[in-house]
Length: 162
Ligand code: GDP
Ligand code: MG
Image (tube, rainbow, N blue to C red; front, top):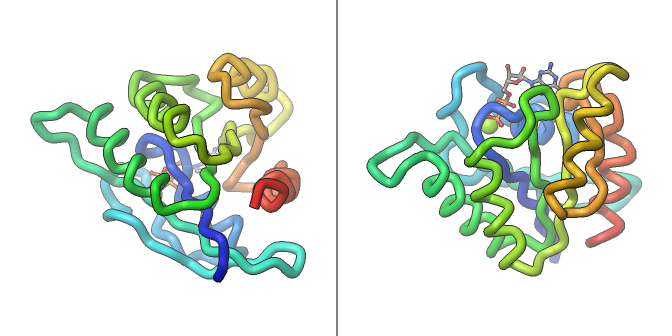
């Protein structure tokens, strides 16, 4: 049985872009507007000869419950079905209420979490990524899903917890 890695986080942080980076091909749909990835989509992945399944999540449209609650609820479903979780935050924006809602779900889950501080396209954003230590989820891995910066270290960290 292949281990399952869920990629969670609020819309637009770059989850689908990161999934494509992990896969090495454009399979997950990337969009400037949130709301594209419906529910959860699973893909077969391989890194350093190890097979695993990566699950892209997201795109939940806000309803009466509010955005943060929606995202947290959907993340909870994905996390429950996963062996490890990649929590993606946007290092160019910092953390918002929607991020904090997912953090609470992650803490309760007791699943291994790899924190990906995305959109660190260059050195200038490294400092912002480092502030993500404050989330209490361990080392933030500074990555650029778009350009590939840091993605090898992130993948090594993911496989370490599987
Ligand atoms: P998702 O909603 O979390 O799945 O986010 P997407 O993967 O669809 O990406 C949302 C937007 O962020 C798109 O315009 C991406 O091109 C952009 N994006 C994703 N990763 C990066 C990155 O590493 N650097 C930059 N500059 N933009 C990114
Ligand atoms: Mg997406």
